[in-house]
Image (cartoon, rainbow over all chains, first blue to last red; front, side, top):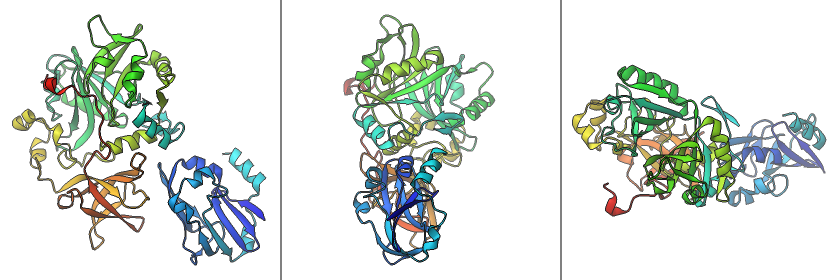
Amino acid sequence: MARFFTEEHEWIDVEGDTATVGITDYAQEQLGDIVFVEVPDSGSMLEKGGEAAVVESVKAASDVYAPVSGEVIEGNGALEDEPALVNTSAEEEGWFFRLTMSDTEELEGLMDAKEYKAFVDSL
Amino acid sequence: MVDFAGYQMPIQYEGIMAEHLWTRQSAGLFDVSHMGQIQLIGEGAAEALEAIVPGDISALKPGRMRYTLLLAPDGGILDDLMVTNAGEQLYLVVNGATKHDDIAYLRENLPDSVTINHLEGEGLLALQGPKAADALARLDISGIEEGWPGPGDLYFMQSAPCRWGDVPLGVSRSGYTGEDGFEISVPAAHVEAFAEALAALDEVKSVGLGARDSLRLEAGLPLYGHDLTPETLPVEAGLTFALSKKRRGSADFAGAERILAQYPDKADRLRAGLVIEGRQPVREGAIVVDDNGAEIGQVTSGGFSPTLAQPIAMAYVPAALAAPGTKITIEQRGKPFTGIVTPMPFVPQNYHRPPKSTAKA
């Protein structure tokens, strides 16, 4: 399994053509206390760069964009009852959705962990 | 840190939720030095100010303060402010984002015999919460002279000059969180040391702009520039209490005719409190819609209430829909939400009011 990162502070775990997507620990820290998450329904089609989920903190609302295109297998239902999971476990239990990628070549150009860390340090 | 009214201010220290809940259960320290502190000095200052505010300022006794509104000639609200009778002068606290316009408007409207003194050399701290008085009592603060009241002797909306060692303080028992608490004016040279002395107390934590906003929203208190604007009139804003009886009778303040035409219940629209169903907040800018989806009102403040653990909002709605319990439809980014009109404050106020027997004093 490989983990990639985007400049929009999402992480993507890839196994075959299945991708699990969430937001990074850095992102949850910037957002602050998360009070609501809306994840996509299974079966919905996502376009790379299109709106995929909504996350609301006490402060503000933010969109989460699809880092790759594909069909949603499932959204993380646990976030509905416990949105704060994104604060406590952003890069594990606080995942947002899984999808079947329609074009694995879209992964090219995404960052690995080391590159993402350098990117965050540069902000 | 964000730029706010030209000041660098923190949105949060350890987190909005934690700071908010701490203020409700203990005491939060807010640096509100961006707010404008203004003295009006000179004979007849109170009467002159009454031309542009609807409150009974000339009846204020020394050491008493009042919430009032700065009114445009057409009655629109230019700012909301606190006015204190500080004995020798009136002391005003106005919003940071509007203070320069306010001062220009005061200059235009007050006679030359009234001196307007912008206290730019004073910081302002707010200490808010049920343990604010206990915390403040642990610093060595006394009345300005022997026999004068100290901070703990004040009731809600009372004010007194005090001192912390040699440092003069202007202390009032007031604030904008719905809690008991104090606003304290401190000379800029000493404000950092005073803030550090407060922050070092076990009861006290520093609180940023984020929780200041969520606290005042729960308390049902409008925020200028959001819930109040030059297009807002006092009655529709739910601020009829700011129209003093005597001033309604004399009707001699800016925009009185237009304002009093709405008094007491003839406004077409009203600022209403809403509890939002579900967990997703609606924010400022969301619209209130009718059954056909047409815009009939606006959300002017909205967020997640840490105390109630659910989203709340303030919106201007048609007067016919402003009764508690009414269901309102709100649209945000194409998605419908249901809001239930709820009396404000959303969270009970916890002011340190005088005992009933002396309430009229």
